[in-house]
Image (cartoon, rainbow, N blue to C red; front, side, top):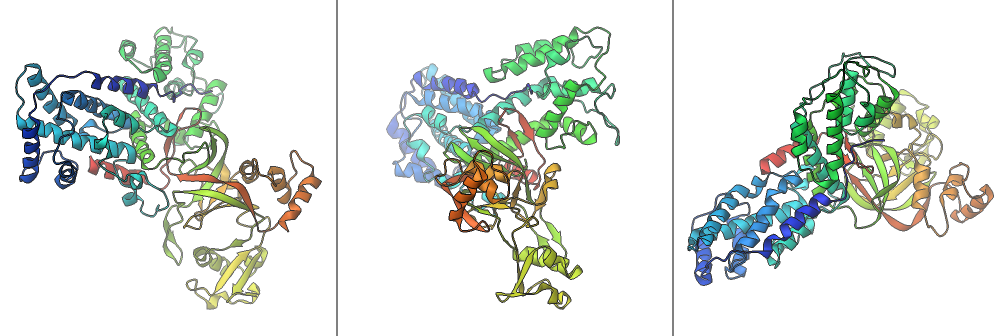
Length: 628
């Protein structure tokens, strides 16, 4: 069992929202001559001047104020300071979204607010320019905050323009000025906060690792190039590995370090600092666990008993390896140590990048959907925020150069669609790029390759004998042949494929190459997504179907049924009119999301960091830094 649980209770945000909601209940009166103030706002837009720190262009704000005859939103009545105070409260907490408050000109706006508040408390008149600045900078920050929190700092269409079949949240924002049409600042700011579990979990993870970065130096663990530890191995490094796994949540500190040990892993004075930290409720248990570890270590004697790699540590190592995309064999070698050595700054940076990705588009508003996470090489069947079925997948290779073809891109796309049907015992119509880049060369080397692989070859739509073709007389480019692989054990699609509407020609499917599911980097396909448990997945999708169920699929594919008799399933399948290459439609369309999240909190509440398989982090980081 893991012990760092990043709770989704949401108390962090609930407490924060309750705090903010009280801001509009109190106010300090400001003497404002509304007619003069409106004239000052109009004069600003008529002048050559501009405010430092504006995000939206002067013309953009002008369109809003001109439509309202330059009437102010923030600075028109006694609620002025209360409304701005609420806005500042949210802006100051924007680091909970992984965004620096200065992105919204927090310091500048706060300084103007404090000047005006001080004058108001003293009963003095407020300079007209200060009021204009407060009005326009507040509108600018308010619009920017609402837009960014809902859609992201960056525009994903400029980062991954090929992913055109995701309905990004930016496309859903029809009215940029809608926040300024609300009567309650607090209500609007609360409403735009992301509520999805994947997002809130990452926020909790960010809080924990920012806390951890303050109290542990996270010094690198050293291991030789070929050195490795298995159960029973002894090394002075073992207790330090254990400590790291405690902080990452994979090891129960109180149980593991219950005996005396001669190890000084943490400076004793850190205990007082952690006790002072006012962690919010979802992470209190983790804070106390860390404190418990420090207490245990501080109370140890001289008998060192923790240098042996035991079964308790072994289980923790396996779970860590699973969550970090490694081969989960429990062997501690160079690769596992490298992952253990990732500094807390890396955790924080990756969480922030994936918070940005999570803002780009919203998962379907349904309790039942299928999620494919490309960097995790995993498929999840989700219902009511619980994972009912999961499995390993193989995804498209990274882009690169192919023999005789130049640059090719087999990366699996991000998209959102609906799974509509499955095809049992499918044929495979070989895509032209695969025919030209691979099939041609294999046939050129081996005249029997196509026959042995169960391929039919067509020329101008007519079947031809593959062993009569002189492949050396043709170039791979402009090849006048097409290829269809017959159903069977060697078919590249395996025994079943799952279809969904998309413009990339990709689908989910079985595969005869099962060994790839045992490796850690499973980017090996031509773009389609191979799934580890196709029969289980088919049975899951057929839940509640009026005519067919999982046993019917099992029998159709040559497997034993689990609940019904073979004869009953066989009879039920007669209505298909045959078992090969037939469409079996679902009772309902099942939403499918293919996402790219290389840092996420899993269904059990634990942080996973996977390799950036398509090398997208650097580009995203550059775009964010440029925007900031």
